Length: 587
Ligand code: GLU
Image (tube, rainbow, N blue to C red; front, side, top):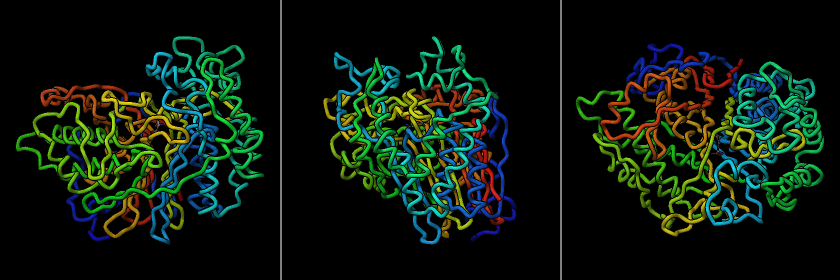
C-alpha cells in the first residue's frame, strides 16, 4: 500500500488522491422500502450473492477447502432454486476470473446461442414489423441454447478443487427439503399474473405447478417451495457431468418444450444443444486514473461500454466555476453514458459474427474525440455513435431489455476471485419450465429488426448460432500495485453498466465505503432520457438538470450490486445491494 490511510482505518487505501468523507453527490440513503444493510469484513475469504442461502453455500464450500470456482458452481446451483426467476441451468453467464498465483485475468463466455434455424425474421410479425417485447418473450421463440451448465463444468475443469458431485449436494438437499419463498420471489410470481390470471403469466403447466397453488393463486412469501424435478436434474448432472443436459433425455425435453409452445414455438434442435461451446474471451482492460479496470468483452457490451464511460469521464475538463458539484457530477456521468451507449448500440455484438472494433472504441485518441463532444452547459440529448478506428459501417439498432439476472462475487483463501453475472434474461425467462429449471428468453437481447432505419444491417441482428449482445458487466479493478482491489457487478438489463460505473466511481473517486457506494442513488443515461432513481435525494437536482437540457425520467432503478473489496487492514469487505435480498459473508 502506498499511502498511510489512517483517516479511514477500516477502509481501503486507494493511492495518492485525497480522501473525502463523501462525494459531491447527495449522500446515500435508503429509498422507501429498503432495509438498510451493512458491509461485512473478514480476513480469509468473502462471498456475496443475491440470496442468503447461496451465500451460506459458498461459505461452506470454501470452509471445506473449495476454491472460488467451486463456490461459484455450488452457489449458482442454489440460486437456480431459490432465485429461479433470475438465473439457472436454463440460462447463460459470464465469468471474470482472477488467478492470483498466475497474476492473470481470464474471462469465460457462457452466453446462450441462437438455434441454427433462427434468422433475422425471428422477431418480425407476418407484416415484417418487430413484435411487441412480451409477445416475443413468452414461449419457445425467445429461448437460446443454455450455456450455464457447460460454463460451470468449465469452471470446475480449470479451477475446481473439490469433487464435482460434492458441489451439487447443498442444492439437491434444498430442492428436496424445500426453502421459504422470499418476498422478492413471491412478488415476482404475483406480478407475472398482473392484469390477468396468474396461470396466463407462465408458459407451461410445469411452471404453473411449481409457482402457483392448485387454485391458481401464487405462492406467498414464507411458504415452502420444494422442487423435486430440479433435485433429480441436479442428481443426474452430479453423477454424470453436464453431458446429459446437452445430449440425451434432458436435451430432448428442452427441445420438445421449446417446440411445443402453442402460440410461440421455437426451433431449437438437439443438434443445437450438442454443439454448444463455452468460449474463452480476451478480457477488456484499460487504465482509469491510477487503477486498471477489467471487464467482459463482446458479446457483452458490459466491459467496453463501462471502460468507454470511464475513459471519457477521465478526459473531461474540470466543471465550470460556480456549477454546483452535485449537478456537475450528474451531468458529466449522464453525458459520458450517452456517448458510450451510442457506440454500444451501433458496434457491440457477437465478435464471431460481427467485426467489433474493441481496440478502436478504447483508443485513447478516440476517447479524447468523444470527450471533446461534451458541453458542460448543455446536454447532448441523443448522442450519435462515433467512428472509432477500424469501425465497420453499421445500422443503428435498439433492443428492448428488461431486468432480472443475478451477480455473485467470491474471493477465496488464495486470493483467487470470481465475478460472475448470470441470467435467464427477463423475470422467469421464457416462462417455460423443464425438469425443474426455467428456460431463458435471451434471444430477445438481439435487435428485433435486422436492419436499421438507414437500411444497413445491424451488428446485433439475429443470425444462426450467434450470441445475443449482453450488458452484463462482471468487473475487476486492480490497484497501482497490481493487486486485486475490487470485484463487482449487477443485474439490471442495459442499466447494469450505469450501476457498475456509479458504484466503482463512488469507491475509487469519492472514497465511499462499499455499502454506501452501492446504496448511492442510481442515475445516468443510456442515450435516452437521463434517469434518476425515484424516492432519493437526486430528484432535488431535477430542475437544474432540465435547465441544462436533460429530458428526465424518475423511476425505480433496481440495481442488485454485489461487491468485494480489499480492506486496508487486511482481508476483504463484502457488501450486497440494499435494493434486493443479497448478502455478503466471509471468514
Ligand atoms: N439479458 C440481459 C443481458 O444479458 C440481462 C438482463 C438483466 O440484467 O436483467 O444483458
